[in-house]
Amino acid sequence: MPPGRCSKRTRPPSSELPRNEKTMTQQTSKRFLVIGRVGGKSLHKAWIEDTSCTRTWDLQLNAYGDTAAQIAAVDLPTVVDQGTKWDSLARHFRAHPELLDRYDYVMLPDDDLLMTARGINRIFEMAVAHDLTIAQPAMSMDSFVSYPVLMQCPGFSLRYTNHLECMSPCIKTSYMKTLLPIIEKYVCGWGADHIWALLMEDPAYKAAVLDEVTMTHTRAFYTGTLYDSFAKQGVNPFDEVKVVTALFENFPERTVVYGGLLSDGKRVGNTQVQLRNGMHLVLTALKTKTPYKIFRKGVGMLIQVFTQSAYRPTQLRLKKSSPDAFKSPETKIADLVA
Image 1: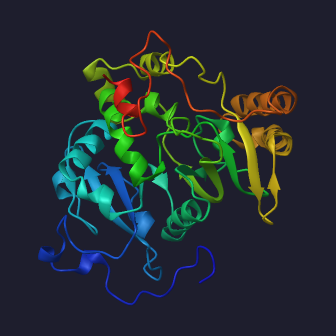
Image 2 (image 1 turned 60 degrees about the horizontal axis):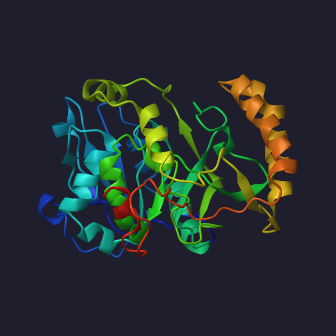
């Protein structure tokens, strides 16, 4: 089957199955899981509305808000948890560790993202094909964007980067197991997403933004129930970022793309990807919701053509004043939260 193409469905979707067939331990041949953190205004129905597409992934909803109990299950039972996104997901995986054994990859999208079933199929397909530990779809030009470098860059299939955000990461389940302790400690997600592309033993070419697939972020930043809950808990996401990144002696000063795969399959290195990406941001900034931010980042990337031409990510190293150094691959993340 051609990349990303959906075959015709040969069985009814899980939403049509009898309720007793939809258990957390149901047997499935699917290798991929999407857990959407959803509220009353969730856009998750768009992810599955193409019924002509056979999804390669199961969908489970982790619901919050006043209407959480009424949110219908899809492939696995809906979980109701009134916490924030990342602490609720951590509790869910602790309660059901079999999910991380059953599936190869898990994607964890917010509920204000527009995506398609075909696109999500392709995300998982690309993650497997390129042996990525963590990945995310690119942001569409009409999105509310926090990190301009994560916007789609035409001409690329994917770009390798040292930073991926917590909005919709696609993570190897074996790696997700090691991330759980730090996610439990730093519940905003903002701290974890600054380091999770750099915690592997050799992080080079293991984290990528996928330009073949886009998602549209429809909600302005710093609004909604998530930020209300942060305020009620006295949690400041910006403080969390400072605390987490300060643990490491070699935390990079900026987000860098250091290589990529063009649409024709050709591999390019630092200089070409930074030049192409920077020029694209500069030339399209006025078409975005935050033109100054996009233009400024584009100029910055053009400067990186000279200052970051030899950049290659390395595993983060804890400062001597931080918790004990990593002892083994299995205890690396646990050391951070000792």
